[in-house]
Image (cartoon, rainbow, N blue to C red):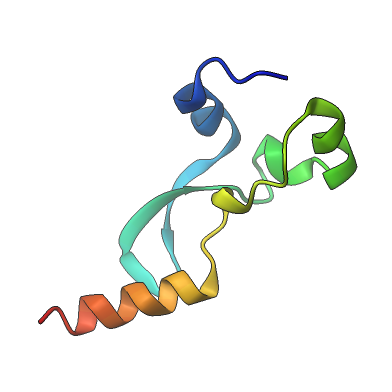
Length: 73
């Protein structure tokens, strides 16, 4: 599978949401109601797509964001 329109793919498979530990930040994330969430790693592999690590707010990124927001200097 070739993604010809990455922006459309992201819009179709994620939702704009705030992240739990830094609600000042909104990201396009996968969740239980988005199509990509329901696909298994095997199904993604058959489509030629790696697991969508980019579609989740990782805890380390949230912690760093929270620190920067709280300590902008």
